[in-house]
Length: 280
View (tube, one colour):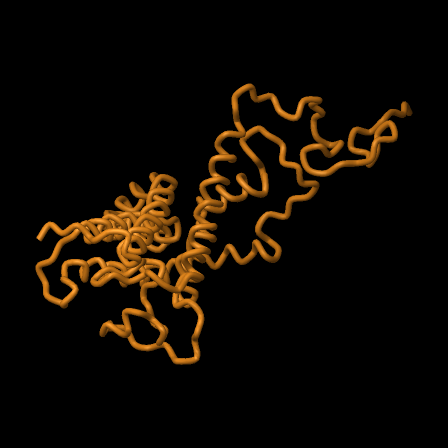
């Protein structure tokens, strides 16, 4: 029987075996990829955008000040449930979490919205490509020798996304309450509207749109229905969520920018950079 070199063998011509798309069992293509466009722009821009938000949110989360300018509270610090919260001293409605907490109040709450975004299906794609190059782009080989998906620690924790969704809904409800409080003046009287009111309203609208466009929300609404005609209300809701889900990427970025803008606006007003322009 004729003998020859098995393309699936561990080595070929003395070259060590490689993993991933460069494994001997895969087709051999000398070029790293066959794309002629600037494919690296999108993952680079994604990495830059996410990195900028991480730097900004880390600074603001640990700052522990300039997050409350009556009647506005930063979304990074809401609900402000630590005893060292500035809104607590101004008669806020939230219960005191406890006197033992001496760090920034934001560190008590940010774990929930950040956990929701970190495990989000779109954001997984974004940082997998932007930071881990897994893969960096379509039709571009990833540099890793082995791929295990989300079956091992720590990526297996991505599967708790649906539970973070429940917390995200609660946080969105609280931020809605905060936006409503934006119609009160610093003395607690209703009938106020300032630029900060509009900023908080725009932010919560985008946060709700992003939260409800979540894949987990779509599954909860209509994922287990076998016959839509028997569930007309849930089918209609599923259609609405599906329409939002088609814009999940755009809503993810828009809400990420809006929450940073809302926090920064409150920071500027609270730190005395300028006074909140009031319409009435």
